[in-house]
Image (cartoon, rainbow, N blue to C red; front, side, top):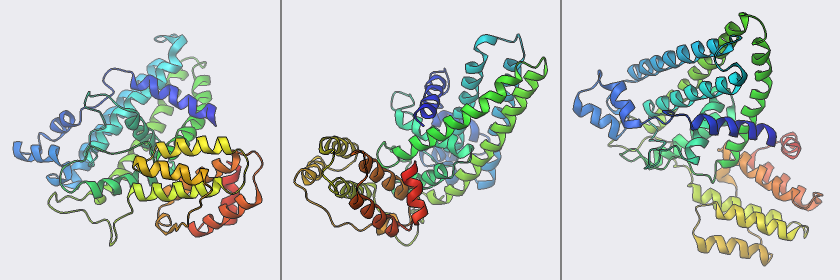
Length: 372
């Protein structure tokens, strides 16, 4: 699993280092919408989001045009680099992957901005680690990873709470969603390991190699891009179109990240106290986990102290029940704590099963978590 995740991380770093991969949200929207808006409307679209002034149908058409452009470009390039004796044949495999994901990332940003996401770049116009996580999720959606779609749904829901009027500046933090991002990265790396064999063999077939490479690229890029577009289109409802009203996210607003983080950390402390094995490892794990939350420093220290003083918490996981992404992340972190001691204790298994029942998981689901 680590090997697959590292493969994706290497490709991600190389592609993000290419010039022009970071898309300026304001500049792109100004260019994409200039024929559909008055200057005043264009300013509102940039300040809020395109759906404020542009119809859904028009946004979909602009998105389709972007998909067609990037599909044609990346397919043509892939066909050329796939030809024997073509440009830089010795390095054609990494070059092909880099150019492929350059277009994946560029298109993903454009689609995200069209459908209401804030700028993924920092104040220095660079794509941050958080932006890399978001791009990993976009690629996961393109490859059909359901968990990636669920995370995007939850992020859109979080944005809807933040977005009272203007586009929020905080999109994704490396706290609640990061373990899921790692899971998606592993899935992408595994798929790449499998598919790259086919693409490499294709290059050894005279002339046909380039055609095979281009066809495989088209078959992966275009349907994936459409899948991402449809996912972002559906989630546009969460952000709404009227900047003067809070979007409708249901009768009850979702619990805050901080609330879920608190519950998760309390559960981790409880799990760590199920037995006395590997106390130093568990303490280090808890300290690392709590440091990545958005909880106040004093509360972080209290959680660590609770473990050191063998203080357990009474927890209610009702707020996790309708959130499959956060639920699965919580269970995986609990399993991580269980494994720190080597052999998993009976009391730890009982506690895990209790929580899983509350979250709606079956005994078979629990077995799958333990096998991962």
